[in-house]
Image 1 (cartoon, rainbow, N blue to C red):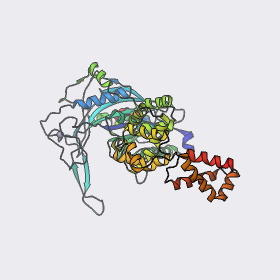
Image 2: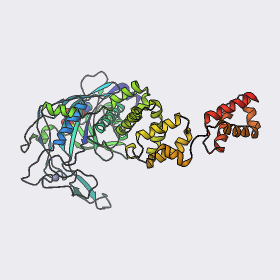
Image 3: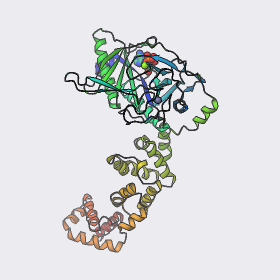
Image 4: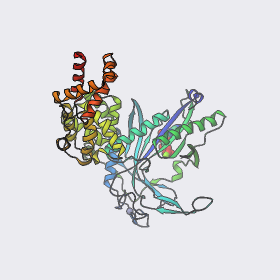
Length: 485
Ligand code: ADP
Ligand code: MG
Ligand code: ZN
């Protein structure tokens, strides 16, 4: 945002987030929810919208919606109902979408981003549409016909609607990322923006600073990553401020974000609720939700990322940055906690997980849960280090990968590969003496106080022992030589 825009207008953003629920079957029929199957494999008369079929509500969808609502501090409605939202689209075979209009399942929640409360207006359940595949090859238009894949039709979604409480691209990104973290912890959605299992629609308006009424907003769809979210917000601020600066008016409309140009473009003028001709879905009875069921679901809500964030800093004494890395993936957080429970030093365990282990996982595009290492094995490795059985280098270079890949016990690796650290002082003394005698120039420098040269001697000792010398003892021996010579 340009400096001029920043002092002139306040940015107002509200996000509508669609999250695909991780159920086994669709929301109103028993077709499986599977990605990557051949087109139209997972479709039946119900999700194809054949005449005379009846939808049957998937109970798990309701449970996941309630679980999400509870995690976001919403009130769970005692009673809610489904409505038909009419519109025509080739991938929506019924020509209406079953959604919830005026009686959604969850109301009035909130989400905290860096200490700021973003209010959540509502969460409702609905079905997803299918997918159009633009095929063929036309020299002018790229594709000259489209195919419809109904596999996604009827996939359960929840839509989480925020109040217009965000004031910058950064806040919008923070909100979306925090929300994704929660959905993943709840295990209700995999939160993959690129694959479309979490989709953000960005509502944005500007108003003169100091104004208390909202300006006209646009809604931008097609935002496929957090980076795109930030870019879409920035380009829309730019566009709207230019219009307002030149005395123009913002048209309320739906826009699409184009990854390639980094700009938004108009898709359609904004439809109002009455355009959809909402009416209660006559094929589904209203839903009554018992307190007992809510209570039961509440017990399945795990400790959430923001709660861990506070606890890791207070209980384990970790920095905020370290905490963030550990809690980003729930499996990593659980692994870490298991390691600490087994008696490892909290800080050292964190360093190993954040450092070499995360590096390995990234390089091999894998997950802590998919590796063979158990928490106990990491504890064993930390113990071997602490007791001076192996040194840091050996642990990283020779042992870690073997545990991660094969799950071999630490002791077995050390014995098999002969990795025990050389702690025999007399043996090391001979080696250190030899190195010092062979390098009189470096010795002189060290004596003159060039502490850097110490690294050279330690390195030589490592080289001669295939990396197995105890650095602590080598250092001690160097000191002794310095004193005595
Ligand atoms: P609709 O159902 O037509 O999409 P809603 O009133 O439900 O409209 O609002 C949808 C989203 O737009 C919400 O996230 C809300 O916070 C946001 N929103 C509403 N008014 C504004 C505004 N003036 N500027 C920015 N965002 C807005
Ligand atoms: Mg909307
Ligand atoms: Zn079906």
